[in-house]
Image 1 (tube, helix red, strand yellow):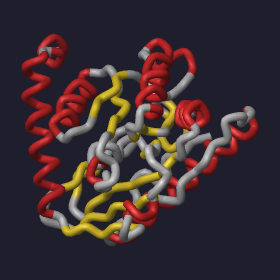
Image 2 (cartoon, helix red, strand yellow):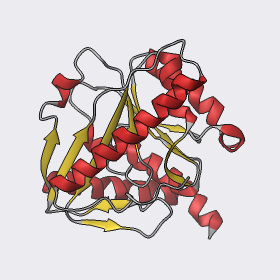
Image 3 (cartoon, rainbow, N blue to C red):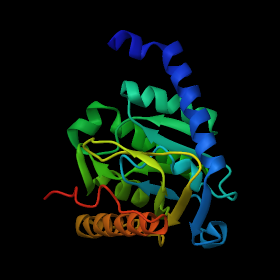
Image 4 (cartoon, helix red, strand yellow):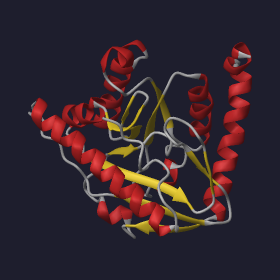
Length: 237
């Protein structure tokens, strides 16, 4: 089964099916956006680093405004990541493979290489989407996203995309996947700047701001569709 899951043909087939499903969800939901004009809100500030909570990442491409013509996303090197990368390519998103958590585990899974690749792409004008969570620690912001912002001077945009009809999975990150023919919300929070000379204390403060920004974006998005964030109680010390 593991060999089958890693088979490139299987991954491409599943990725194509996932991309088709996501297009269906995007096309058949009625969307509310906050701010109403995301392009105007980020005008002159691109490229940006789009932050999201793990488990809420499958629909983040829906939040891409017209002004962002080039978009990349950090995807793990797992079998699930292979399928998601195949889907994203079909949605016009460049997949960067590796872990963004930081620390030894991230290095083992290509985190350092991925960080440098994302920095290179950001400097070249491509916006990057990445989950902010530490590995297997839902709703705890890892160092990677703050370090990327420091290295590149690009702002972090906390974002959430949710739908009123959805699958809520009983996973460590309370993953969600939207269903068609409902109401959807796309919320992008205030941009978070990181100084190039930020020290550890400043980076720690940035991580706290990212956590707060993502929590607020998700709470607001779920409220707009008449629900509650299933991951709101996940943060552990």
